[in-house]
Length: 244
Length: 244
DNA sequence: CGTCTCCTTGACGTTCATCAAGTATTGTGG
DNA sequence: CCACAATACTTGATGAACGTCAAGGAGACG
Image 1 (tube, rainbow over the protein chains, first blue to last red):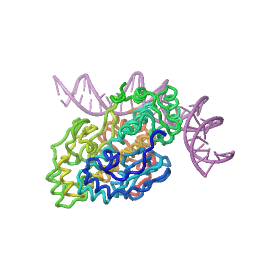
Image 2: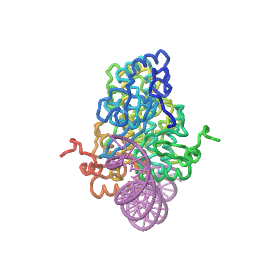
Image 3: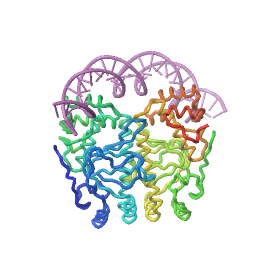
Image 4: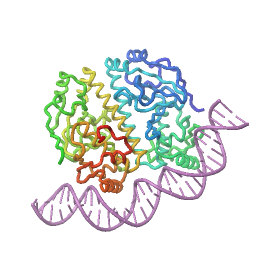
């Protein structure tokens, strides 16, 4: 166990994830308004759903801890569109007609802040920066999804896996958690699906990374041993932060 | 030549594409407000850019005629994220930080209605239904992009191409244009890229579709001869409209 | 402690990419 | 408006990356 993100958060104004959540850019008085409207459900446990495809969209959800996977089903085949970690927002696909088209399943016990759509709309009318924050989040979701399509189409199995591990690492780093080793409660089968590979291929590539002491991922624990090599495998520029 | 969409449109209130554009859901007085703020540029000709990756986002664009392709470049490789037809909105990727991350290139001479971001924001504050229309459009873009990822990962070459032709047909049908045969000024090379295939594979599959008299696509003219077979190739349910 | 699910490792196969060479179509400049 | 160059498309032969199938081993969970 390398990082345990406490589930309990008393208020938006004291939340460490403020800057990546709805709350980004709000003044303290506005934060307090937001605070009163946020619904902090007790917790979701592994296997539960935040929402399912076809259901009415009641709220937008901010992940405070845990992991959520978003997926659709096509011809009996699951297709995973993303894994959402603390600080991420899920449910924006339902804004179009107030019904979800994807499933949101809990992979690792999660605390979630939910904001009802009606209240969000009301508050957005009063607080323009909240509205523009929602637009920003949706725009980022579009960018994310397109970048993922690029990865799916233009990268090899090794590049995909290196890229995936880096993106998880970066999420933790940006949010101020430990990032050279961290818990990642995602099945290899699910990663394979997300990257459009088979579990066998994922297994083979991870075995290679492990042999070469680049990164190990065993029993839901990721351990990055050679960042430089990892970025090379991903065909990505090594950021300054990691140099030396 | 099967359909020529006239470029000239005097106002939003008389525009045939109203219901799929920003304007959807607005009252006539609101439409007139919108009208005064929309910039109807003379026209874009083939090869021009609406915007390029890295540029500041000044406006959101509604396509009135022509075709726009949205693409990114990764390791010198083009990756096409979509083709946008009359009634479609492009540029929403820039809402996050007011800079575009993708390129928008004109494939077939186009008329475009542009709305400056500042004015859109101002007007959105006044007219809530305009704001929610923008949210709806962005949400649809997310859905689109994810569905495309599903197609890329879970479909065969034949399914992909059948699916693509159907999606173009449906766009024309929904907008009230001729849809059993229509002009489609997209290079096969670009379609190949969009579907993550090679031009050779596209050529082979189209040759097959042509031999079996399902659909022909020659010289930028699409001609659907057997819708039923086309839907079968795409592995999609034949909609009621096409039955009998 | 036994069962179920997940992961691993090996042998083999398939779809589609790649390479290559020729044909058609489009664009251009005189 | 024609000639010819550039670009797009076609068709065939070959190959590779990763999928599929299979069977054994390790964790997880009750």
